[in-house]
Amino acid sequence: MRIQPAPPEVHDEFYDAAGRFWLPVARSVDVPIGGRLASRLLGEDLVVWRDYHGQVTVLDNLCLHRGTMLSDGEVTGSGNLACPYHGWEYGSDGACVRIPQLPPETKIPSKARVGAHPVREQNGLIWTRLASSGEAEADVPPCPNFGEAAWTFHVGTPSDWHCQATRMVENFLDVAHFGYIHADTFGNPDVSSVVPTSVRTSPDMLHIDAKVPYLARDPWGKPPEGQDFAVVDVEYDYHYDVPFTAWIRGVTKGDEYILFVSAAPRTVAETTVFWAFGVPDSLQVSADEIERRENAVFSPDRFIVEGQRPEWLPLDLAAELHMRFDSIGLNLRRSLNHHGFPVVSLLRA
Image (cartoon, rainbow, N blue to C red):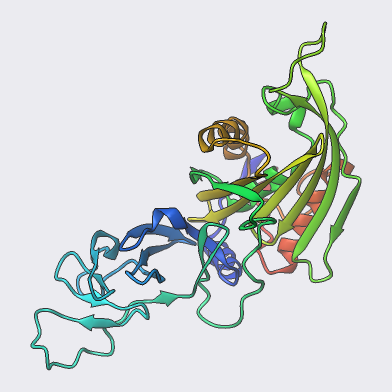
């Protein structure tokens, strides 16, 4: 069986479909007052910066004068972003407001403007939408309990995966692989049958919810005498927001936690994974411990996903074999198809 590359026009279809949604470009903590950060989303180079009033701006990362990366410049005392090459300054609307080489009374050409994109800060992340016209397909996906007084969230270190964003999200929602690649963390190798008890897709096909009971391995519990490891009953609530965001709420022994992920496509085959982990204040877990635990879970997932072929998630439901335990992923593919993501046939005998 041969795998064909997707034609360039399919890349454009993917970018056009994704550009109608809010997608993350940075963590809030990585863009402090007076800070700027280079980012890449849907094949576009962006600069994310915060002025001295705390306002965040997302612009195209390109000075129109000589093509210099604005992210290498500085936020000025007047709250503009200055190009590092000739000092041209851009405001939050993308218009050039100062050209130092011109006399102060000279009118700045109206064409001296770079693309500016809408911004939202939510869930400890900075979000933008690249579509230049029309309303967003959906609001910024909420993270349950984020910002509540009784909860503590750690917004984790983003990681870059060499895969399509849809592949990463489907892996996050896959419930049948726990005992095989996560047996050193929460996966129970003695339990191979994992099936959602219910899967519900919203009428607008923007959201999917599922419940998954699981007898998980408890890597931090004391094994009973004669047993290799401790186990614990977990009730997982899964939620998916089209196109690249999902979260899991796990309830264990009366305790609960939230793991929120949003996969931002740098390109069609490169993805930055943003995530946040939250627990009630009654559970004391350090940021370092959360990073260590989640990296131990994400690492084998990343290894598998980066090796999947074809690189594009097949939205043609006849392209792969689906089972009852794949119901979340099956509905994810239907939802992406419904919202205009390209159906690509890349396999041939």
